[in-house]
Image 1 (cartoon, helix red, strand yellow):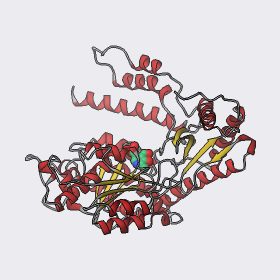
Image 2: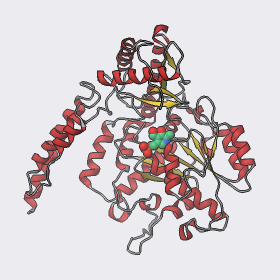
Image 3: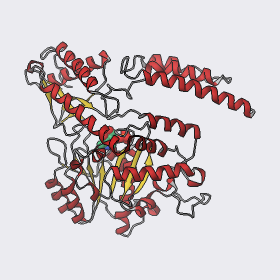
Image 4: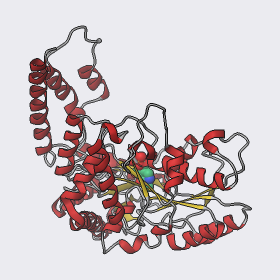
Length: 486
Ligand SMILES: Cc1ncc(COP(=O)(O)O)c(C=O)c1O
């Protein structure tokens, strides 16, 4: 293809994609929040045999949009409260588009200098916003799962090095024992990271948690006192269900006394540091050895964007660096992003994080985080004010952006309450005004609300509350027979 044809084709595809993207984003606050197409319809629309011949790129973009749109979920919109999912800030989405158009390989400084420096600066800004110590190292990952993988690899390196073992060279066969301690409520991705690192999902010691899912410091003390060596301890800042924070000051004291490594998974909760009104929740977080967070959750950067920080750059570097002979190492103090994550070639994720933080500024991030917490509280207050005959109960202390709700059955029967809660969630999803999902909390089915998107307003909360209450009214207590287990 000659250059002029390539230029024209790219221009046309980008213009069409921009037109479609703008229409989609303009409609985020209208229409159904959930998808309408079934999996069969999506397979039909997007399927078909392998194309034999080339087609005009604009036709391809049109076919993608036509095939996908009914299967899209307006998770970036103002009334999506499922999982813990943010939207995309305007500057972050724009920067993400540029990251695609610029198509930099952000692995090495030498093949992506601006991408490497944007990461460096965005990491420094994030460290300040999150209240982490100066001088920590940072890596830009696909998400919190890989951020935790990276951090725990650094911890594994450090603890085994102190025990005289080079885990990167020798692996774990024959290595000294390395105790791993996690809270009972650790996010499943911590276990996945441990599994991928050869430390086993099930060989960890689980520390009991309290009614809000916080690790019990007294129980951790007991576990650590029974160990004859330093442990890798994983704490949590922001429980995925309740939003609760582990008692970090006590945990940090205990891990220090054990000479262990403290990792904090703050996939969304770490951003509470950016809000002066909620910073106290993270007291002691700066004493950890490594941290996980996501930019694609509460910072409202498009997927995929996670962050890992480590207070021991040499351990972080040793655990991740590749050092292939043909990699051109920098000599002028430039930072090579590949040294800090488990990837070589990769997307320039730093641009969107840089743009999100620059466009909001310190005050904007604080307002976004604080605003989401206020909205969560508004939900909780709305439920508290609902007629008691509706049997609605908020199960958590709403300290952050998460609200756990149960729709009880008057009999007090757990299975009947589970069935009613599931039915109300299904009715809300079918209505389409908002979208939220369910979870299991202490063995009971619950509805989980997470306010993480930057577009949500108080009106969106009120409109969503009205829909939820209507759905609860339509499925009154006692209306659903529980299905016997088994
Ligand atoms: C506490 C916590 N850790 C880890 C994760 C996983 O994040 P990701 O999906 O970005 O890997 C989540 C997701 O909700 C989370 O809440």
